[in-house]
Every structure is written in structure tokens, then in C-alpha cells.
Image 1 (cartoon, helix red, strand yellow):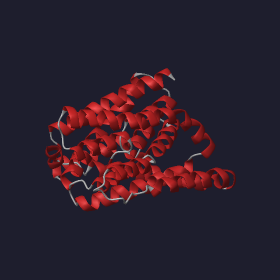
Image 2 (cartoon, one colour; image 1 turned 60 degrees about the horizontal axis):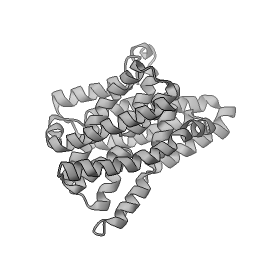
Image 3 (cartoon, helix red, strand yellow; image 1 turned 45 degrees about the vertical axis):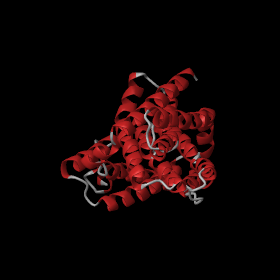
Image 4 (spheres, helix red, strand yellow; image 1 turned 90 degrees about the vertical axis):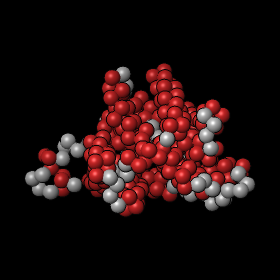
Amino acid sequence: LLDYIPGFSGYSSWITPPVSLFLGLAFALLCGQAYPTFNKKVSKYLLQYAVVGLGFGMNLHESLASGKEGMTFTIASVVGTLLIGAFIGYKLLKMDWNTSYLISTGTAICGGSAIAAVAPVIKAKESSISIALGTVFILNAVALFVFPTIGHWLDLSQHQFGTWSAIAIHDTSSVVGAGAAYGEEALEIATTIKLTRALWIIPVALITSIMSRKGSHKITIPWFIVFFILAMIVNTFLLSDTMPQVGAAINGLARKALTFTLFFIGASLSVDVLKQVGFKPMIQGISLWVIISVVSLIYVCMF
């Protein structure tokens, strides 16, 4: 926000998405969770608005061209992660099925959004939802710091890093944050592939509903993805030729909103959340995360 105050823009350059998340984490761990309900609502809706705003800085044709290469692997990784997650959590670790399935779904698709969409379908208990969200959130926070570092260490291209982060990082916020920290092209590719991946919420929730007779058949549709696509269409066919400064301004504001959102997301983590997660869910979450990260990294390096 300092960018919009005359004379203060130079002081905001150090506030990157990872730094913003770290400040939120530090605040929560040192001071505890302040207004957790408010934090949850603000981070949820502000993230969605920010993602839609990012669409005003993207070209539809370029985004589709850059994202289609990862679609085949995205499909394979979603199905594979769900199967491997069920095996590790339910078979090996003997965890509760709902908790194991929510962690697998969050890892396979798009973190907290997928968990929130599938939970009512299987009528998961609040404890299972909290454990799954806590597990995914902790790994999201780690990924935002670790992935750009590994990307630079391996000298990954913008395209490679964008594809890798979109597949291997759980939540949309951390994917966009990591992409923004790595570069413009990485951000565009990561956002496009991740939001396409997030559309898998619908078929996964539908299939889960059919297989779970006791569950609810109400499915949450991620409408912000639709608005993101509409924003790209408007920018590509209307703003880019006539008023490019408008799209650039909205996109710039969205980037600031994303950084601001990551502070609220970081502030949602507390010592109580860490204690609640427990040993087995973290083992499942980390195992799945390592597998999908390594396999997807090999994929992007080969192609």
C-alpha cells in the first residue's frame, strides 16, 4: 500500500510475497491469532479478487499456449496423487479415511479450496477439516520460501518453474506468490496451470458425491476462476489495444492485494494449529508433497 502514498514507494520494494507471509507467521506465533474469523474471510475473498485482477495483466492466447503443455501431466498428477495419498494415509498410516482423503484432495488439486469443497460432500467432521487444512497450510508456507530457492539453484527457466510450482505447490496463494517471486513469465504460467488444475474440484467432488451415499450432493463451484478467464478475455480483446494502462493498473493493484493477502494467511497459523495437526497427517502430507514435487520436477526438466 505504500506504493500509493507519495514519497513512500521506495520503502515497499522489500515487501515481497514471501516476506509478507513471513511477517504474518511471525505475528501469529509471537502474538497468537488475532481475529481468526476475520482473517479467514479477508484472506479468502481478497485472494479471489487478487487472482481475478491478475487476469487483467495476461493475454489469453499466450496463457493458453504456455499452459496447455502441462495439462496432460496435470491430469495424471491429480489422479495419481489421490491414489497414492489414499494408500499412504489410509493403508499404511491407518488414518481416518475422511482426514486422509481431504489431505490427498488438497495436495492433488488446490489446497484449502479443494478441502472446503469436498468436506461437505463426505460430511467430514470439523476436526478432520481442521487437521487437513492445517497440514496443507504449513506445507504451503514452506513451499513459498523453498521453491524459488530451489528453482534458482537448479537454474530452472521461467516456464519450467511456473509449471513445476503450479503442480507441486498446494494452494493458489502460494503458487501465485512463488511465481511472482520468480518472474513475470513464471507467474503467468503458474497462475494459468494452477487455476486450470483447480477446475478439477468439480469432477472430483461429483465423483466423491456419487461414491459416498451418505454424503451431500452439494458441490461448490470456484466461480472466481470463471471471472479470472473473463478478465483475460477482456484484457486480450478490449483493453490491450485501446486502454492498456487500465489493465496494467488493475493488475498492479491485484499484485499488491496478493502480497497483503499472504500476511493474513500467515497470521492464521498459530501454535495451536501446529499442535492440532499431529504426527500422522504431517507424515502423509510431507510424503505426498515430496513425491509430487520430485516427479513433477523431473517432468519439467525432461520437457
